[in-house]
Amino acid sequence: MSDCQRLRPASTRSNLRGAVTVEFALLLLPLLLIAFGVAEYSRALYQYNALIKSARDAVRYIAQRNPAEPVTYSAAVDETRCLAVHGNTSCSGPALVPGLTTDMISIMPVLATTATGMPIAMIEVRISGYSFAFAFNPLNFSGDTAQSLRFGDIHATMRQI
Image (tube, one colour):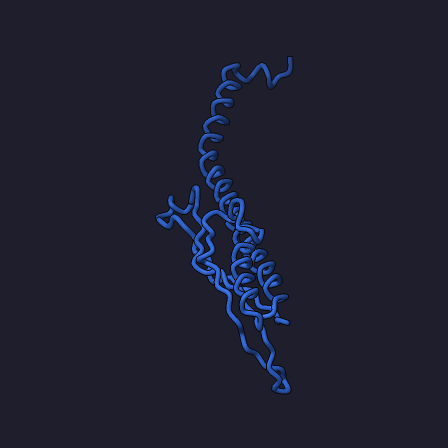
């Protein structure tokens, strides 16, 4: 037996185990708050990116349709709204992002001109009014009472044929 082991009482080792447990308990709550916060904001970022991709796919779809044909074009506008919300043109299946509805999708022409003054027909798909609902907002502990995060208008514009 070494000199250090003889000088240290046996009860000190068990006291150290208790101190480690108390320190872990004190650090557990902040670590859990950070982990849940990162998870919630990652989920918000994922939904935001899904909305951007949805708007891009929808504008790509409607840009290939001719607005001079009113019967088929109005059907294409409805299909575009379904594509932006459900990921398909038949409006079947769940929404790509929870809470997204076809009422939040607006499709409008945009008139633009080139540097030489020639008009260009463009189309814009805009998703507005979407709010991300937190399952758990860690900022509630700091006094922030927001239960949702409102995304700004998400839009994509493309040249139309």
